[in-house]
Amino acid sequence: MNKEYLSDFSKEEIYDLYDAVVTKNKKLYDNITKNKMIDMIFKEYQDYHNIISICTLKELNLLKKIVAKGSLTPDEYDDNEENDFIIDNLENKLLITTLGATLKIMDGLEEVVKTAVENMKVSEIKRQEKLIIPLLGLLKVMGIEQLSNLILIIKNVYNVDKELDTILSHSLLFNY
Image (cartoon, rainbow, N blue to C red):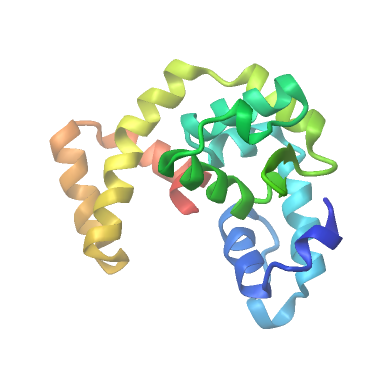
């Protein structure tokens, strides 16, 4: 990963992603450096499944466009609020860089992102998002302390006890 580009990110910003993505041997904020967190995030991203898991379908589709062309200029993508939100999310997830207004895959992740977008299962992602996205929206409105009650409500509405538990326990997108 391009550590020079990432030098503008604060330790707190990197830690938020590190906390969501790194699942093993996680260290507390005060016990790890920004560079070590970046290295561990990069290591997690070497498994393309983790990239798929942390992205929405819209984010994966934009990554697919970037992979296909090598980079995207503003003329090649719609400059609107929705894309601005997607681009900000992908930057915060350290998957793309924006140089000027040109979008590129983060240095060192080109092959694994290409593998991720080639192997994403759109129908599976849509099915999982049908459960996760409403839950994430409600979390933002209600606050995270209500998580257990909210999960119970969603389970009853969608009638998917085991499926929801499995999806939530393995979803990096939900953790993010």
